[in-house]
Length: 360
Image 1 (cartoon, rainbow, N blue to C red):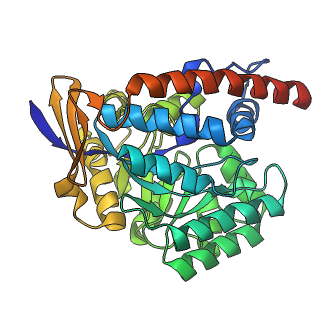
Image 2: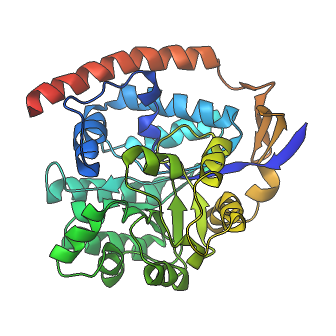
């Protein structure tokens, strides 16, 4: 068997864990990135309750660990189930044995400023109260185009109070750039920086529409960019062209299953933009280890590892604890987790369809 350091998924969404179990396709089919969000993912997160969220997280963590992923950097949203949602996710991660960095992605897209206040309140509370050894917190923002200036100021204040970093979607699509420009900023990056909402070490998911100078600015400020190749292709937003301008890039799945070997293979087979090499891409595979070391200290690189027999993950150890043995989760019955998820998914799809009828 081959032993590897534990793999890191530097940007994902545990709440999407039930999606592979038959999420209903929106009708009519979305034509733009924002329509994909509105008709599919934002409808999914609005339909989540505690039961479906727990089932989604348990399935996602189970599958991640069994694929050799030992750390998940999660960006969570459940607009009708905000208070306590980070504790729910943290309990799942701690119990099943995965290392996790959690935040709630504050947004104003459903209920305006009160919704964002509730999301940031959940981040602040979790940062102050969480003491789980495997789990840490961050301040979350959904994206620049769904929050006001007041929300950015509040997020920056929480970062200063707690010493936390921000985790946010940035320039995933031109819609984010155009919104910032309508507000008077050159880019969403400039807007977030102007409110001090991105302390050093903050995590910026996607960066598809960042130009080279913006990526260089991220590097100067010690910010992390996370490339999500399968998601970017699936959403039709293109792929970032200038990530070679920084060495602070990690690899994420943006809610796709946390099989990091598949994510890296997809990245490796994309056409190389000018100035980028396969060495840059290999560094992104390894970048997650550096990101985790910044947030958790250097110990994960020695305490988290996986053993593979060919393509199959046979054993996983996190924080010195064996959590996967012979390809199966040790703490719980994997078949039971899947059965629970299937039952929860059927109810969740019904609620999504009801929302679709109400929205139409």
